[in-house]
Length: 91
Image (cartoon, rainbow, N blue to C red; front, side, top):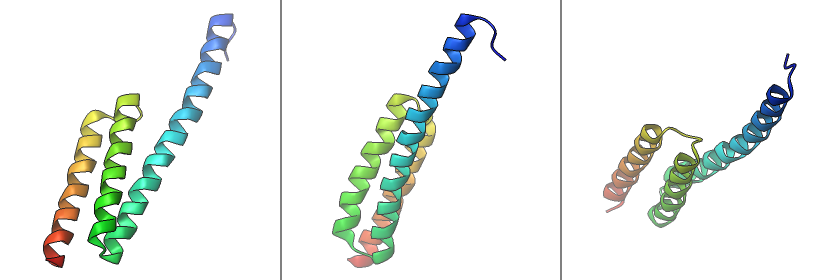
């Protein structure tokens, strides 16, 4: 357990950061779920809008340090591939 003031402050800071990062991660998952629902329904227009929002949220999480840059890029790439596949199937 923390015994000195600096360590106690670090614990408080970590707790606040954890709370913020958890909220950000949850927000990203929400937008990813919206994209998944649009893909499942097969609606290309809604899927494109959901993709743009999901991509934006993922990259914001990357910039905030919640998600590793390579992870964010990989997820966006896979979302784009799924959107492209849906777009081709609809055309």
